[in-house]
Image (cartoon, rainbow, N blue to C red; front, side, top):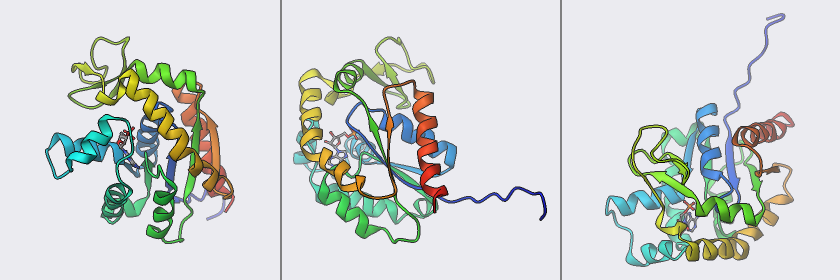
Length: 222
Ligand code: AMP
């Protein structure tokens, strides 16, 4: 039709990379809402399984509390099941997965190559990460992220709590584990034309805008 803008809705498959405290969860949530795709967070699935006392072996609980990584088999199984659900077919944002090279390779095997896997790495200096994690709170009722400066949840007024793994000693361990286990994944993806990195040390809105442009630059370039 002459003059009419052609809207091409390319469903997105996005991996959000970044250290603990980089804002992956917040940004993944925003992106998923804006693009009407599913957000898949392995951390959320694991925490939910614990809350509901579902089968999650004792070893996985101890590992999470210590800030270390749950076995690859467990998390790859979670993602395999989640990606097979109908909503994930319309696109997804993966938040907190992959975290090891093994998981990154498993993800490649789980996906067909009809659509590209866009990978966005959120970069934040370590001192900022530490401060963010130390003051991070979450609503115990609705799960909305918050900071220690707030008294109650800005979304539902519920009480704010600190995640058990946001304790100082565990924060240090999580940052160390990230450096050792997860940093190599950034190098694994960096060579791909679908990789972008964004500056995560700026206001939430600016990070969200940069992520959006990064994704558009990958999909638009195809
Ligand atoms: P997150 O909410 O993404 O920070 O994850 C919380 C915790 O869940 C991590 O510290 C790990 O113990 C565990 N976890 C989440 N995702 C993964 C993953 N992809 N591989 C291994 N452990 C994970």
